[in-house]
Amino acid sequence: MLSVETISAFFIASALLAIAPGPDNIFVLTQSALHGRLSGLMVVFGLCTGLLVHTGAVALGVAVIIQSSTLAFSMLKFIGGGYLVYLAWRAFRATPEKIRMHGGQKHGVGVLYRRGIIMNVTNPKVSIFFLAFLPQFADPQRGPISLQMVSLGVIFIFATILIFGIIALIGGALGDWLNRSERAQRIMNRTAGTVFVGLALKLATVER
Image (cartoon, rainbow, N blue to C red; front, side, top):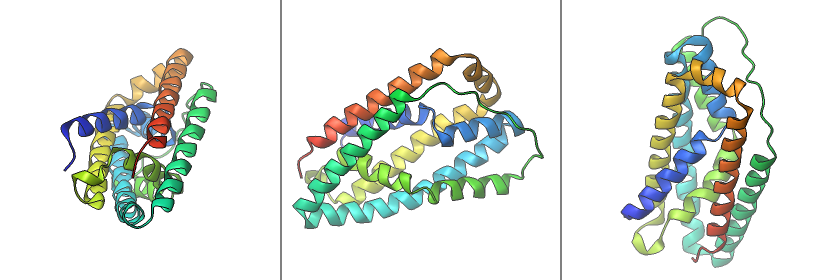
């Protein structure tokens, strides 16, 4: 069972990562700004449905690694840390960009929901990120690792729905604001970079 402190820390970290500009939340933003809040929310639900697939895969894989091989766990830990450092480097170097609004026909909610699922499930970086991110908050002394991974995945999905849902609901206004404010984009990118560095350092010190 996860501790209250772990759940709180993980939820805050997940929410910060959801806020940081990326292809998924930018896609939610643009769909909501172009086609309405419902369209943005359908994309959100599709993306989070895809996260269930990654959560299951990581829960099974991480549990096997942690329980069977110290060497494999150490390799996973340092590979994950390296990937998080890479994400931090990308975030610090990111430059503000204009969100390009293109016209077009309004898509059905079913189409947008399926598109969100496909976007998420077919992105291998999501599984890699989960492999690097979720194990930091698991504790072998607190019960089965696979169940902890599932619990963390559900918390991550809840945080994503909350943040992405807010983005969808205020998509039009937020899209205009991000296009006008380069400073806001820089702050969010640097916040994301700082979070990734902190997570990398934490992961490097995790004991099996």
